[in-house]
Image (cartoon, rainbow, N blue to C red; front, side, top):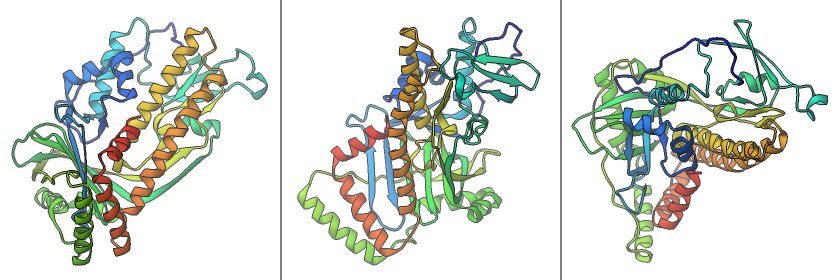
Length: 408
């Protein structure tokens, strides 16, 4: 937005003293993190506040003993950092304070109306988008970026259609206290018949829980006392009650065949840490679904992040897709500004939409397919995913390609 000459109210957002349950997995070598480090400048603040790197990810099936691991060739390098939402917000706020000579922020404000250029005006440099606030003030801008979440008012006001559906699942999140201090540099995910459960490192003594399950079980988990809730978490990661002898025998034979062909491939199994308690008032749930806007742009408007797309958290890609949008749009607009062109022109925005949809749609389809594939304990499906996961785990080059695509 173009700044107003009036004095803007100030709001201080500080890093919380204790870990919170809403977190993101941010890969350091991806384009979006480079934007954070080099352009936005908030990453330095994040590392000074609180974040936890992990060097390995282990994913396994509750209906068999098959697993897959992802890690860097050099285990000295981290795969990603787990960063709390409030830490990201506090770091961005700190960076905005540092850039106060060039950036003005309107805190404690609410948008009540958007006014768009009419179709016959879209070939002109004016008018711009007009944003009316509840206070009666208005702001005009060459380019409005809708980053206002899955219920985006910008998207709705533009009438952009969205393909979406709910998964009839909720995610239960919490801060977990581990039984004993550990290096805690592994991200864990296990696919249960009711949905995946993940434990992501926050520190040497704490991890973040994301447990996707039915609405009914999610509510039951919230109502459990702390001791019973902790027992349920440990059981979800350690219990073998969903495994069958048929699947075990078939999986073992297939694994032996693969080992004979590729004797040096594969990765050793690690055991997840046990949980001893949870953070105070950190247990909450939220509904899960998927959604995708048919258009990311209109004249002088671009949608990014959850305003354009929403995914299941099982792959940890929701925030990364949004950061990728930011990186792409920043690069394209920077070039347009360097060339002295109108930032809100469709020429640049179409380039952004094309590039991001070509990446986001395949990623969303893969996440949705994975969710459906692991939502059943039917023997034929379990066998299919057992063979597929074992084969993938034995081919390092394929795993590298998977990690590379996820980091874009």
